[in-house]
Structure formats: C-alpha cells, structure tokens
Image (cartoon, rainbow, N blue to C red; front, side):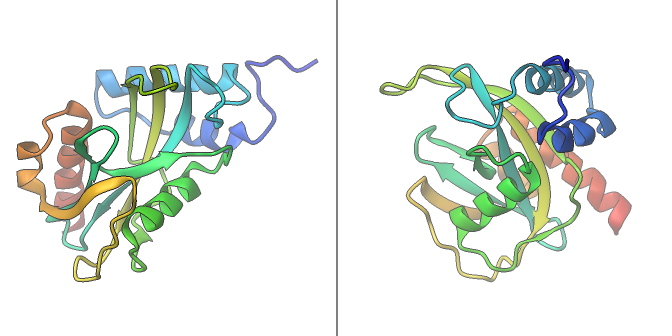
Length: 192
C-alpha cells in the first residue's frame, strides 16, 4: 500500500522540480522543505478546498533587458505583487503561472525564460469574509514580455504597471518581492 508521503500521482511533477531546486538563502531553503512536506502530505494540495492552504503558481515577468518587472496592485491584498493565482486543481504549476499571467495582464507576448522554478514563498493570506486565514505555497516562474504591449487590467487588480527593477522597493519592501529583484539582477549579470 502506498503511503501519503510517497505520492505517485500528479504531485510528482512539482515534487521533482522542488527536489531539483535549491533555495537562494536559508529562509527560502526552509520554505522549499516545508513545501515538499505540505505537498507530500496533502493529495489535494492544488485545491482551494484545502482550507489550511494550497499551492499557487506565480509569474515574475520582466522585459527582455531585465530592467523592469510587471507588477499588479492586487485588489484584495492592496499590495504591489507579481502576477499569479490559484492552481484550481491543476498540478502543472508552470502552466498555472503562465495562465494567470495572461489572464491578469492581457499580454500575448509572454514567454518563459525557463520552465524551472525561479523562486518560492509561503505566506499567509488574511481572513476575508467567510474565507479563513490560510497559506499560499507560491511557486514562481520567470517570464519575459514586451512592455510596449497594451495591458488589460483584470478585476483582481487595481492597476498594472511596468516598474524599474531598482524602484520596486518603493512600492513593496517585502523580502518575498525583493528576493526576486535580487535574483533578476544576478540573472542579468550572467546573461549579458
């Protein structure tokens, strides 16, 4: 009999990616290990019905020169963040991130820089209405897009804006976002 801690289902795709990923610092590495345990112990980890938390896919979208990133002023959380959202039971978090990026921006030029994990974060989502506080196990991928393309603001956003990488901290100083800024700067050094 198969135990819950040894999944043989759709969770294997993301578990393989998580096992091949190394956090950029001690904190991210701790979150990676927590995320692996959460996914192994929760067969329904991609479902919003799992009230303690669920896996999400996010898109860190940069321009081709990695000088700017596209951020959304999230309506519910009232913060500037990367685009992304719920898996809605889709275990392919890369596809979730891409789908959410297109839905939340209207961009057609979105292309992956890699299909490997770019960043991880576990963060609480505050209680709102009947929805209790829970955790998002956020798996992030990096994409590029054309900043000249017209943006379409979805109902989930108050605004969408391309922001200079060095100016992102003026909108949101969370370590979660600043870690992706640092990674982008490092990636730019190795790419150009």
